[in-house]
Length: 329
Image (cartoon, rainbow, N blue to C red; front, side):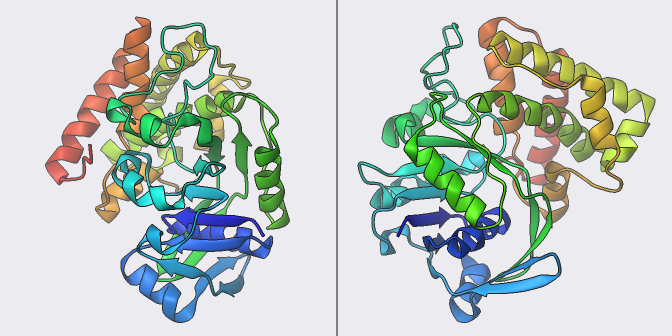
């Protein structure tokens, strides 16, 4: 039986855990606080399509309570990974695969990337200061994951699925490995979509388009996606940021298979939704600024590409987050 530990069993992590359990995996959870207490007492409940399923899973606040795993799914925010490395080590053996189900440029991005730039096989300081994750976990253990579902914890121990069921997977080396096929099959057996993409980095950049533009504008204004897309001024700003981000991605060999206009329209057609960064502000949670925006600016600077719109919006957001005590470096 495949052993999978989900480290950070919040909304997305818990949703993945339930699906993997249904697929027959031996699933363990690392969680904290009232959420963990509820899982231990009453099980983990997932509400999807109006149906509620409850899973009695092994759970602890200490990863050391579990043995070496076949897969570790990290579902904490990207800027928090460096803080949990020592906690992860008891779970990691010679054949353990580490999957970071996070937003933004992932810490392993330039491993075997073959971009033809000076950045190949080097860590990104904004998401992996001093290469701590790179050197202590190792990029050879990583499988990439682009997360699309939206879920929320409606009460401790209870996760509600809101939309989406796709977790796109890919090897940093772009190979079709056995470990990639196994994880994809498990997620599919658990009722999810889990396509395997050789060029996963292209999907990372498509998602970053929205993360770098709609997220900070919504965070700064409180506006919803449709309001931002419907206002001529903010729509022009979104387009400008997307052009800058596209220039950076294309300099690394990424291909954008949809136009900026269609990408904006797709977001603007979602009525009443605020991106995760604004939701974090309203909930008083630390913001994902460095993985989503600072990392792109870092790469752009190293490539000699100017990104003034992205840089200025990021500066405003950092100042706002610092004033609110929500900038988690």
